[in-house]
Each structure stands twice: as structure tokens, then as C-alpha cells.
Image (cartoon, rainbow, N blue to C red):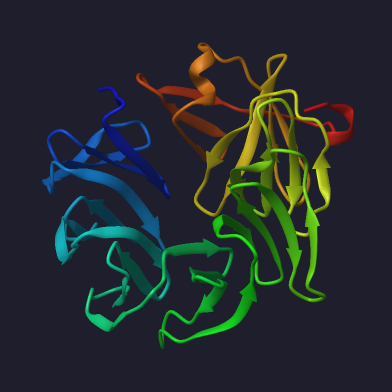
Length: 303
């Protein structure tokens, strides 16, 4: 069995869930890839999401909730002219291209609220949802649909990363770090943009230079030389890199290094899931590695 480019994959505990976008078949597989069951969903799938132990499928026309115990679709939410969907517990928030903002119950799909707005964007950071207005951004209460804590911006924001205190604000003309406690805005490097996010770290940079920073704008790695990729586990998602037959997982508690000999350079691509000391990568044909930890410190290595 292979996972091709037209397959979405997500790991959960000791299992994988995969859906083929061409056929719409969703399958649960064990960590050894043995098939447990399959169910037909939609051939127009564009995303597979495991959030708070709930499995969701997004297609061009619907959101589906999958009951992984009863092995069937529980309910679906029809989508019309959709711009953005966020699975922000305990509410699923959608924004249409005609600016209709809606909220649905996370577990039943029941509509909670719906309103016409002038919002042109919808963003999620660690713990918060933000809407984009003509004047800047505002924090959205996903339960009540009310907004608060407006931040006035001189330019339209294109992308957000951060938490409830610190925000990286990406504009067409650059990247700014914003401290909500003192309203301080610190411009980043020339041509910088948000490249990726994992755990409490943001990868920022341009085509020639990249840095890894914390949400508080502390530099974790000043000049990244290795290509970073994501490793998923049951509890979090972290950045990782491979160098000289070693793999490093960059965690907020300190990086952990493993002996690692990739069989193909494509190991940095696709979906990677770690379970205990096993790492399985999906990038065409799946590969399984047994990881042996090396007792070294991040200071001994250069990313």
C-alpha cells in the first residue's frame, strides 16, 4: 500500500487515517499500515483534521464529522462559497467569500450563530481566533461571535502567528512582531515573511535567510542551514531537521537528537508521525524508522 500525493493522512494514537481525494475513500490503518476499515465520503476532499479527538473531513462542498468508533459519517455541514474554515474547539468557524461568518457546535455540527459581516479574513493563533477588518484585526469569541481587543493596523494583514500576548503580523511589505502588553511593534528583516509554525516556534525569513523564533521573538536559531520539516505526534507538532545521519526534534523543553539514516532525501516532505521510538514518514512510499536517542545538547549542533 502506498500514500500518493492525492492522499491526506493524519495520525492519532497508534493509528492512521487516510483519505484518497480521487475516490473519497477514508480508511483507518494500524501503525503497521494494516487496514482496519474504510468508508466512502467525498471525492472532492481538500483536508483531513484530527482536533480534540474528533476527525473532520473538509471537501469543496461540505464538512464531515467521522465517528471512528462506529466507523461512519456522523453529520455534515454544507458549505457555500467558502473562504476559510477553522476547527477551533468548541466551535467550527467558517467565513464565506460574501463575508458571512458562522459558528457550529464542535460535536453535533448544530448551527450556533450566523451573521453578515464586512470581514475579509479569518486567522487562528495559539488560543485565539482573529477576524480581519478594514481597520486591522479583532479577536473573536467563537462561542458568542462577539469581537474585542481591536488592533489598528496601517496595512492589511495577510497572515498571523503567535499566542494571546505576542503576534507576528505579515503584510505585503514586510513582517512585524507585536507585543500586546505594551503595543510595541518591531519590524523584522527585509522581505521577511512567516514560513511555517510548529509548537511555540515560528520559522521566519526570506528566500536567502531563515530564523527560528519563539512567539516572544526570542531567537532560537539565528541562521538556519538545514531544511526544517514537521514531525507530528499524539500530543504536539515540532520542527525537525536531518544532518549527518542524525535527526533533531526541536522542542520548547530542549532539542532531542536521534540516530537517523534516511533512505531518500524526500524524508523532509509529506507527513511524518512519531509514536514512542518509531517514526513513519509518508511521501509516496511509507518508510518506518526505529529511533535511538543520542545524549547531546542543542549547543553542540548548528541548524
